[in-house]
Length: 121
Image (cartoon, rainbow, N blue to C red; front, side, top):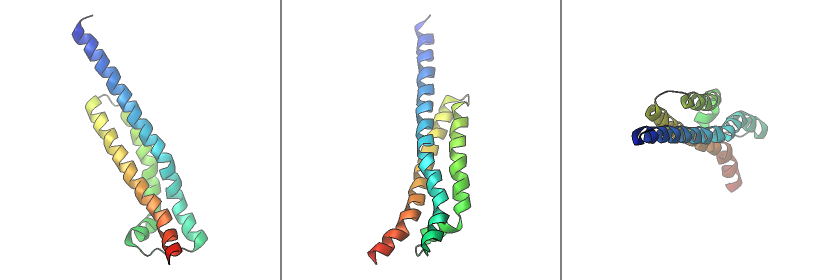
């Protein structure tokens, strides 16, 4: 084996490992994201919380969309593991990590924001 083929083999293995790690991060963050997206409506109904902020109101009104996207994000991460283009797959997974973090932030904020507001008042 030449040095070039050994380097290429190592690069392919490294890119697969990085893709797997990024997909695992997306899948790991998707579980609480799905849980929070399901709990938005239940929390609103159980505690008769009336959202006051625009972000909360938007999230309460569009809960099915947030739940649907929280399901599609991990599916896209799994699919991107098996795509042939390593660079495209890595970029896609990095974008999915950012998207899942943003969505988790907003759904967590929708769950805790009104409760904190009621406790402060």
